Length: 88
Image (cartoon, rainbow, N blue to C red; front, side, top):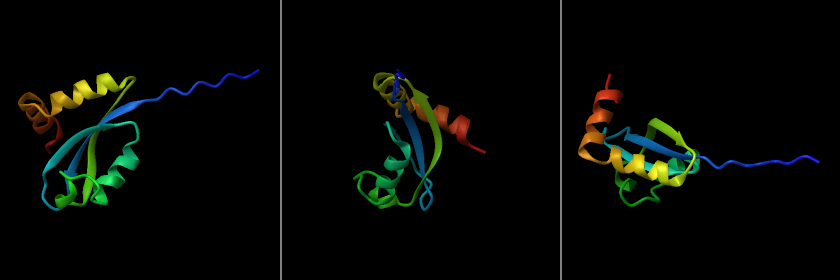
C-alpha cells in the first residue's frame, strides 16, 4: 500500500511592471496561474500596468505565514526592504 501526501505550499510574489517599473506584492498557491491572471488584466490594481514579470518570490507552508509576509512587504519597511534587496 502506497500513501501519497500532497503538501500545499503558498507563495508571496513581487511583480514588476515591464512598462512602468512599478511593483506589486501578492500571495497565492499557484504563482504561474496568478501571473497569467495579472497579465490578462483580470486583477483590477494591475490591469492598467501590463505586462508584469516576477522579480521575487518566497515559499511558505501555510497561507497565514504567506499573508503575514505579504502584509510586511506592502508596509513602508517592506517596501524599503524590497528597494534594498531588489535593486541592481
